Image (tube, rainbow over all chains, first blue to last red; front, top):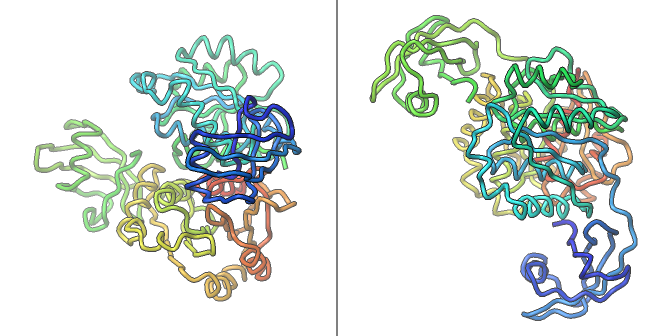
Length: 238
Length: 238
């Protein structure tokens, strides 16, 4: 954890005394092993970043003198579309995407997505939120990404994706594509990565039909959890 | 698994009948659920890629008619230098690097590397080899990367790194660097990624002193397992 995220309810103003009694108090005691007078980096969920001085620490609570004064790092302009991978890999993939600054993620279905994945407890709202918070605390960011689950491929492509592409370029990572993935693209893009066994030919042609360009990340077959940081980092403007 | 790796001893020539009785026979039976007549993609470790037709399958053995006829995908020209992360993350990081085609990896020490990590069974030769094979089978490659463990930072930098940089550019991923990481670099590079809590100032200046340029992968703090696919994919020539 490079930044401790506080809820807006905990930090009513830019300078506040904040009392924590939950997992974050435990984290400060046991992981950071902080003592009175120490400073830790904090942020307000969806708000500013700053620092906190520990003014009290006991087995039941931790009190922080919080000052918030810095904007969170600029967001990535890119939207990520993700064929649902194995739920454990999804968690890691979300952390990759969040730590590369993505703020809007669609998790979509595909022929090669194991149907049971959609029933996984790791896809529940609270599990996804927990993965996103982990990513933000790791990355030193405060702005919670929006994640939408789209368990039907065709309506996603024809309704949502068509609209997203009205003012964005679109790229789909395709091992067989002849065009290499462009680097340092300044315009906002929609970036699609298929599930672990890939999109089908039908799915790829549906994506192409609405304006997604197939691009290659090299001659090797990548897992979702490799493709996502690979394509996001490659496209990032310098 | 996108390609089943066979040992050179198993496949004496480019066309051979191969009898398997080990984990690969079990994999063909239980995971691929293949039956007689099916074709699977195979490769010879450090050799050619091809396909195999299943000619016999029983509870004790699997026989394949193997034809090897294709070169493995071209290697990445880049060398990866990795501050040792948590051993579990190391395994995933190696799979990322292998699936992006890296063939030479140095795992190095640093002040922020937990000393206990060096004692982990996951750092044993056979565990590392197993991670590399997983990466190759995932990526559809056959060429086993070389991995060297360097538990002393200074001798690595002053002896090994200096030599590697004689005919290569060098970049070290540094969150505070002002220069963004270049994209699509055609020359062979040495790419260094610090351990999860980063290189120290002393370590960074030692790396700079021998010619490594600090580059940024964006304003957020990345984990090793995110930085590695991020920097390798960004540098890859198009």
